[in-house]
Length: 191
Image (cartoon, rainbow, N blue to C red):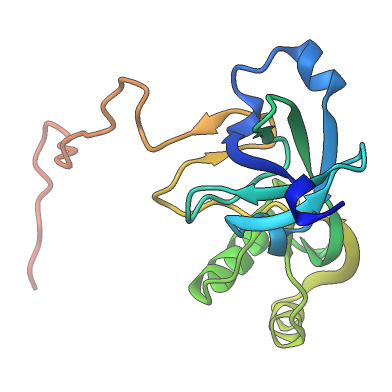
């Protein structure tokens, strides 16, 4: 196909919001790795062989499960393509969920994109980080798996179940006073 024949895409429906299940089933798909999905401008070829030119608003990452809407009204389902990752889990013999939380903390301090799961983490391959994690008694295995890192703390993200979470916009206040008094005095003894 020539550049003129590329199908323009400038809209993304996070998690396929508002798309009828029947349309989703009939949609073509495109498998993209994380490096491509975090760009707002890229080209791809969908499962029907159509060349796509994607132009999304700057800073908008595409997630697995999102639906791209083309200029002709057709829709394309995005799938997270398997890619090289490090699969990190707590030691099966004497590890705990706390070990996984500790590993996520140390990776987060290094601003590494991390996929968080209840029983494992995934990061892009990095031998220095792999050595650090192994020194923390984590099990680190190289694998070819889809990679869906956590969104930024202040941006919305779509979870694996397709639900979008944007801050606390559910009409509930999460503010509470920080005085957790017990209704009785605690004597303080000074020696």
